[in-house]
Length: 326
Image 1: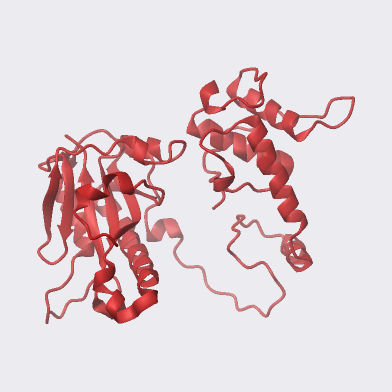
Image 2: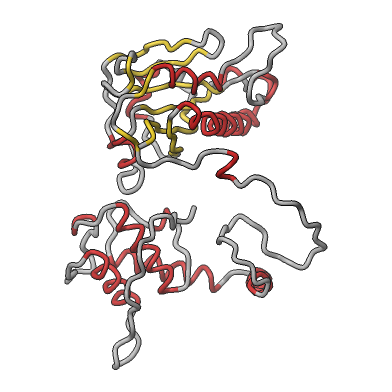
């Protein structure tokens, strides 16, 4: 997954090479870091976070490096303790990888560039242009279909009614009812469970703790009261700040025993598909509840799994954090 470019700010001065020749990768990155942070960095091995960089500044540094070097770095290329030296290694590794890409991919890139279309760089989209084309009428934009991810939450408490309305998107119909669930499930087995963690004082009428959402009874079962999930469970540079301001978190957890007898080795794949459908339903419902949601896949589940009272083979597939819209 490439780093988000949503946090780019105003452009910085272009960095020119010194008269004596082109700058090395390390020196070019050093100048970018020093310009963004406004400090001198004598040691290229120093942790940028230790120099005072926050998540927004780190993203800006990465984006400027990408623009300066003409490449795209991946999220996993940036360690939790990034330094100028480590960033330079990532740049060189990316260059090496791109140098060995198939010639066909490079040719397709050239075809795309001649199309004169201002399209976002999305690496999962095919770019081998030249096929017969059927133009489609413009439909609703993604923003009109569903609210965008919310990464800044207000601090006023949410109403329990809003949480109830949100979770109602995941309700299941009683057996024999004419209504259907809002999402598909392989064999109608619904092996993905929903858990909600509420922070203290952030949801009116809902005490702090970890809850199981029962989709048939439409109830929250309190499993562990007065529990504290701190931000150390989340990736520190990008995700922890979102969780820090959130009022609650939702965890989608598989239960293999419910589906594996029917689908064998395909059970986990179907659970992942179901979790994705559930997360999308929540995102679509959230704005009408006055709630903002942000999906976060990177969550340290093992340190807290005992509080969920799960079977040994159950796993957290996905998580979202939410709060009032600021």
